[in-house]
Length: 338
View 1 (cartoon, one colour):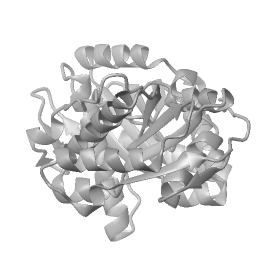
View 2 (cartoon, helix red, strand yellow):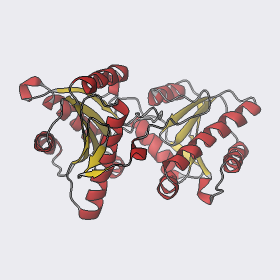
View 3 (cartoon, helix red, strand yellow):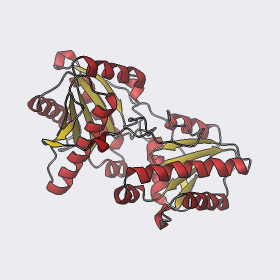
View 4 (cartoon, helix red, strand yellow):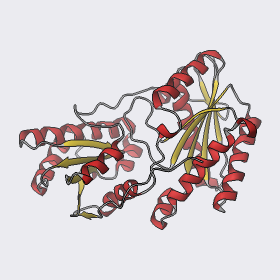
């Protein structure tokens, strides 16, 4: 059984502007952290997946928990995360018709320095699986998961069946596109069915026999200000709290609306400018800080509380750097309570 890493109770957060902001990070700090290192170190699985794509192709599968946010509010998300981790491990056992070579949580992929979400899973299987084989593997996983949780339709599934000689980034991006399609299908038609992209030997990807634009497969690195920490952030934030540091959360509001209306590039630009504004303003004021990126949140650990006026100045700097002065580019922030 995969052992979940648990932590002591973290302080509650007193939020000055945005309750959702503080609640989400509190949840991430308190729930079990089933880290990718429990399964396979990131560097190792990336190397192995690259080798498999060069040799014989691979099948990449993304899983995302349905209703993860609601489960978190109800307090049963950790149980569902653990059940998925255990189930993946079970079906990867050769005695159970395995063949799964690596598994990790989250989507810190595409060289974009994204912090993984705890209710997302990625794993890959050697070789190219046909659609029927993929359906069989997912049905097997869902059946065992249903037995463990007593729930139906527990996961969204996106799959990429990648031919040899493709790049790892393209395979991961294709699987991510399939996962998005699975969520849209569930939303529009109430059908929870795995969506499958095919990445051929020419590097062309298709979904339901329709070609995917090459632009969607581009790997764009998210440039952040120097010094922003993106690796193992949750564990490091817990350590900062234990050491008595003051924790301030700064985040652009309504990032989903920005991404949906203007595209991911505009969203990435917002995060880049926010990181520059935070580091620049703190350096200007002589405030020493460790800054962690968790999703779209920048978590700042300092020996003293950051004044609200400083947050307002960071907001103004961010807005001034963007070419679209949209009202929802404003920043929300929160403090951990003593």
